[in-house]
Image 1: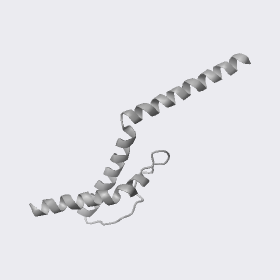
Image 2 (image 1 turned 135 degrees about the horizontal axis):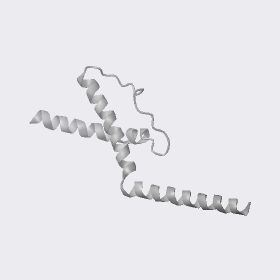
Image 3 (image 1 turned 90 degrees about the vertical axis):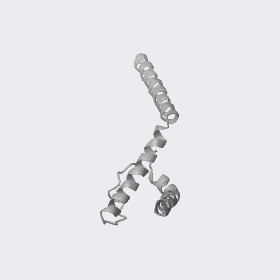
Image 4 (image 1 turned 135 degrees about the vertical axis):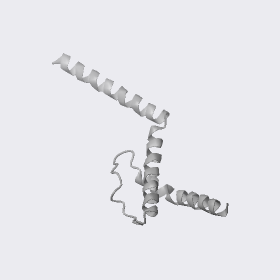
Length: 97
């Protein structure tokens, strides 16, 4: 019985160390930020494709469902205005040239 408890404690410690190291490396290499930016980019590309093909629907039902710690919807809402402004500025620059 004592041996089983010792093995369980060892397994829990190893799992904890693994999760900590994994979280550190994803932070260090900015994988979490890259994931959020790629999801925002996909959404913008879908909007552009919809506008180019004449389908101007704002339906968000076709978005990938990402839940949990890295939920991108808050990020999209926070950055939506600034991204829209950037796109408008670039469009104006292209029209002026």
